[in-house]
Length: 252
Ligand SMILES: O=P(O)(O)OC[C@@H](O)[C@@H](O)c1c[nH]c2ccccc12
Image (cartoon, rainbow, N blue to C red; front, side):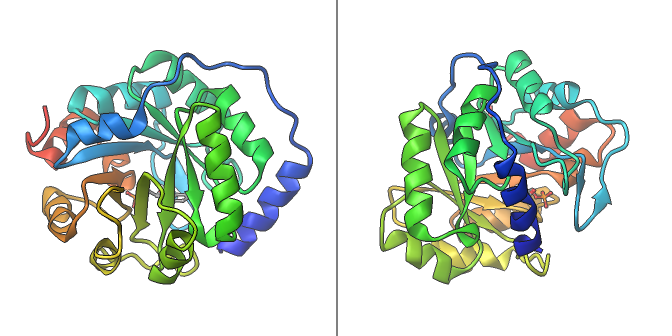
């Protein structure tokens, strides 16, 4: 699956022209998550996914992001990939303009042009997926993002991938994707597999497959300092109440 997505991305990049700068001032991402520790929540605006199909029919990205903020999330993730996740750049720009939390651009970023584009559409942080490129290339895009004033969530699924990256540098924020992007298999245990190899100074985020407060407690016990949650919140009618239930009053 991941390789199919990357093929489509390469084609998109070949046609990419940079939009005008649309965002506002950037808001610190890692710092906001650290304030949420022990469970800084990145809540994701996600309409659909290749594994689950359409997740939410009644889809108003700004209303959802505002409910996430009111419920106690520390950052908002917005899917901008159109082809596989029915996302849009416009969703991110709109959320950035109307919500004060930092906004993470969730997409398959493998090229410098996409990093520049992220800044222009208003991202405070971007996702870089370890499995999507060589560690050297990831470092180049990582440095470029920081030089533009953005931050980076470096995601890995496999321990091997993390080791390749740590051989080169230590990212400030490291995410474990509990879902394997090739098979879609999801297991929260992946967080414990990775956690003991993550350097102390990096902030560890556990991503995907978190449905309830017990799941959150499980990944926290494994060492996660923040979580990234999409589907389970997107399926709820009252999104704000769902965030509160997930966090169970653990953050202010
Ligand atoms: O909907 P979930 O299971 O709560 O997962 C959210 C997020 O982790 C997931 O959307 C995700 C993690 N890494 C990605 C990379 C690309 C696209 C999507 C993702």
